[in-house]
Length: 397
Image (cartoon, rainbow, N blue to C red; front, top):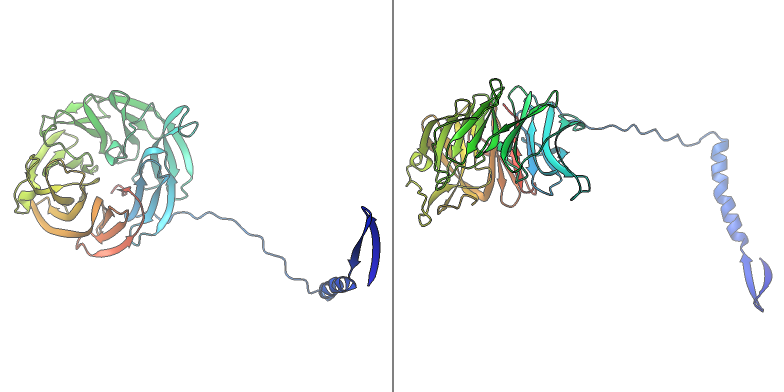
């Protein structure tokens, strides 16, 4: 061992260099040199090839779950097993819809240039239905900024037009040519929403108890029906069950009156109470009467081929239309009978159904879960927890 002395600040500091350290370093270097000499270098690492997963082939059991303000995005799930397939970004209180062939996803949204302030921008963002890549943005002159409702934004059955409800401060509908991006504004005074029917039309609900309809192939003018519901004492749920191909809608009132409506002709086809179909006492617009009433967010879903209507019901007084469903009533619209009353393990806020020969029923529970049932026999298929407070959206049939 060698030692050097260095004088510093009037004293001595000893620095020792160990020969054992040098010997150890030499020993570590020798095996590598020997391997190199023998031509046994480790194989080079393979270059990573990056790829991006894409969605599988579209199908009727694809489900979108759209969140409200601050949710950040919409979930796309496989309805069969609940598996998360992807997400689509959403701006503030956005509305979302599929194109009829699911090749595109349309998001009507509002953003600000500085996040929560700055210049407001209203638009329809168009995403590829398989890659989920943003394809284009179509500017809007405005859009209603409220809790997302499926009846506020809809796509024509041929996929050529979008209809976006607007309120700034008068009520109107933006009719958007999705190919050219051209926008025409149709005034709908005293009315709300934009429910597509057929290739060229949309319908609205009006505050005087009527329904209005516009056929864009003829004239951008609103035609109204005669009043058929009491908007003051027994209003309609805004989340109606719509068959855009047939141009029909099923609307529920707060007391449970089922109104069957022709959207294109803007006329009521039939009206009857759901409690009567179950052999129960009719609900009245009475704050003191306890009766079975519809309630929730998306309160009903209509399977068009079987003509079955699924309704969330609860016992309560009048004006309890926001109460979650404790039973699911299965209503045959052809025979006007309640064929089954399904008790729900957890109260349900929203219901939706797929439009195919083997339909699935989607239930969003109050604790943010997703329950999937066979819509024809109501047997349980799968469940997913913690999907959030979401609105279920299914592809157009």
